[in-house]
Figure: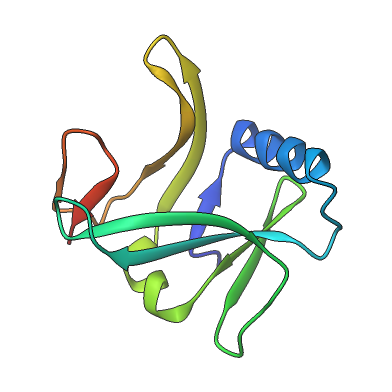
Length: 110
């Protein structure tokens, strides 16, 4: 079972960015939770071609998503989407485990 889901729109944007940067098929989208932000925890999204022994991988619409075990606790059941509207564009994470979020949506509490 996948820790989180990646929407078709988000997967398309990830593929576009990977192609633009000339990154090969060994790269995936790493989603990580780290301490910081005004609510205590924040998300980090990055391209990565390294896999740790305890990393969990899943495939979504042709994109490999990588989550480390520590982050998985906070991310289980989450969905990563890509939005492009009048308020701006970027990846958005809907996290059912977040007990609070900051006004900018970049950090959360659990």
